[in-house]
Image (cartoon, rainbow, N blue to C red; front, side, top):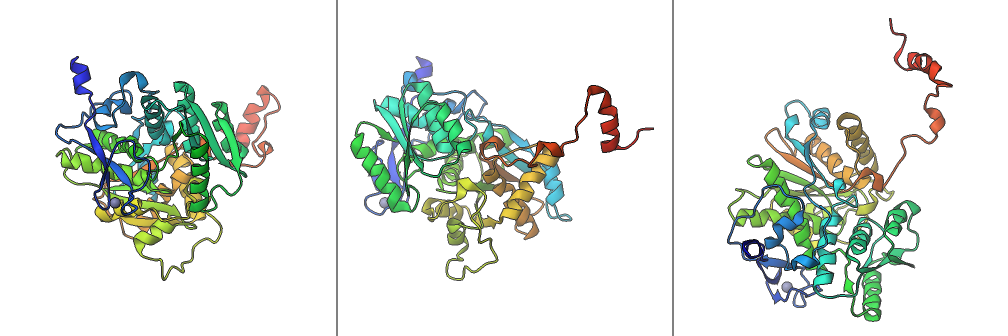
Amino acid sequence: VIFLQLSKSKFIELKCIVCGKKYPENAHSLCEACGGILTGEYKLDYPIDLTRRESIWQFREYLPPVDEPNIISMGEGWTPLVKISNFAQKIALSNSFAAHNLLCKMEGQNPSGSFKDRAASLSVSLAKQWKKEGIFLASSGNAAAATASYCARGDVKCLVLLRDDSTYSKLSQIAMYGPNLVRVRGLFKDTASLVSALKATEESLPDWLNGFIWANYNPLLLDGLKTIAYEIVAVSSPNVPTHIFVPTAGGDLIYGLYKGFLELKTLGQINEIPKMIVVQGAHPGPTVDAVEERIENGQENDDTEPTIAGALRASMISDHAVAAVRKTMGFGVKVTNEEILEAHNLVAKVDGIFCEISSSTALAAIAKSVRNGRLNKDDIVCAIATGSGFKDYRPPFNEVSQIPLADSPDSIPHVLEHIFGASA
Ligand SMILES: [Zn+2]
């Protein structure tokens, strides 16, 4: 009985982040008055329990209301927060950056391999709570893998709308969980195509939940993502990061992080909200352009090739990402394909971390910010490594034949002599 009382959700209502208009918990849209996104308001009257447990659901007081039997969880969250001192040392200019002050939040260690599991766990649990027949979403990447996985576990039907040119490597993981798949030509061509695809699906399947993992449709899912901020504070306190570098597409991750830190600040559990740094590839990078106000005079020496950070190819400005950066006096960084690959390879070689190419943008942006003097030795910097390296795989060699071959176990010493030189 005591446990049930303690775990009651403190959710009050949804509220527009721009004009403050209030909405019920199941509102599934942007603010009809001003077009702003909605976010969950909670009664912030009791400190958030930051002792380590087994999933995001330990924070259920500060998550939307879901009854215990409807919770679909598999230990999402509580990913490691690791120091990457060797990488930091390599990128540090003399005295400009203290190597022990660089942290990496390893979101690739979530059950389906990305941070989206936090939102998917919440989304599928809400579908059960609201007695929906299934979930549909449009994604060819991490959001689809996460949602299909939690739907499988929760015995909730799942329909994934895919772009018609999705790659086999991305589809394979999604298909393993057994969702219904439909390819749609021109799905992500622009916002209008996406909205009409989701609307047409919604009208055909009225009792399903639109689980498109984007706050514009699912304001509540930001609360799944904010748990990353809770965990960062839980593990790093009292040396809470001063800067959080966040790979950004739709903007929910960076806004969710900001929201989590804001709640902790309101409750007096941190003194200051870290600066939120929005990171994108060189092309497209509309949200960084908006933050850095480079829209009019935007002619830079950027790549003309699309960014290799596939998960970040978003062509529209995320207003809520811009808001998170502005409210924390943060900034924006675009990184070229060359810079991304350099960081991606370096962190694997010197710190043993293999993360998704799109996640390496955060590390590349940190290196660039050190070079540009935007970070200094007192800063404590955290990169959000959003996904596992297995998500978007680039083999380091084209042919296995490039690896030395021992014709038999007996010839191993001979091969080793070639690699390491004669010993003694
Ligand atoms: Zn509004």
